[in-house]
Length: 313
Image 1 (cartoon, rainbow, N blue to C red):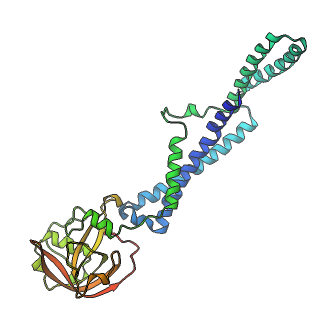
Image 2 (cartoon, helix red, strand yellow):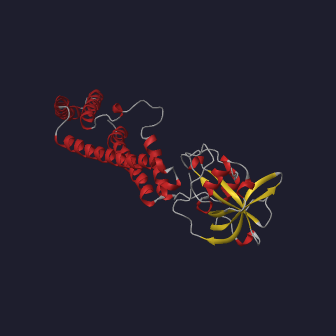
Image 3 (tube, helix red, strand yellow):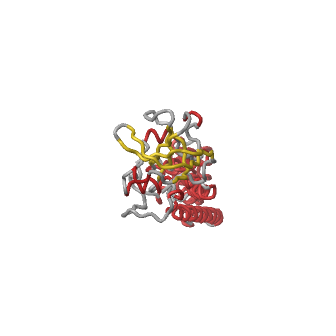
């Protein structure tokens, strides 16, 4: 066996199994890190947190058990030849070849070297099979090089450690289109009846109520106190802004923005996009284009920090 073949065996039987272990453990740690640091709120709906947490602990357990198995297997191979019969034949061949080769070199028989080379290769194959049990025999058939999928998953996990998930901003809201309509949530009211007082409703409660009974003038004069981030849509006059939040149904990939217009007494330039505000005021109905729309007449706008969980459901 030449040095290239030995390196290939070494890679397949030593490095690849440990690459799998590192990848599995890395993903387990990454999932649990998102949970502990609260970043899981930015990625999926809280109803699915338990799946991520269980998956994190399961991956850590599988990775640890696989690591212990590899350590135990390697120690066993170091102590006991896996195939005693092949090992004995290999060492007998080594003895015959060594003595025979020495005699042939002394005698100068050139043809003998060819025979000796073939016997040496045969001996190498026997020893290699004993020392390095084939890793590839335990793998499924794939068109990609061995270790490709594990390497790709490990790179993805490393990127997950390096890149911190960020909450969607006002630019994303504008690109996806802020509406006062709920596309789909896990809570779908079937009738117009709310146990909450108007001033206790969140932004999504107002949008949900408006979806159930879409008559903006019916809410005129009701008190309002809601939180959200600022969006500056071009189609609204300068003394209006949108107060918006993203709604999650499953994960961040399907998040969509909802919001209501806010009428100000000054220019909206005093409130920069993406800033979080708590707004108190009164509901009014305004006409934008040909559409009557529920609008907040702001009496006070208080800057607040971005909440730990910026999404609604």
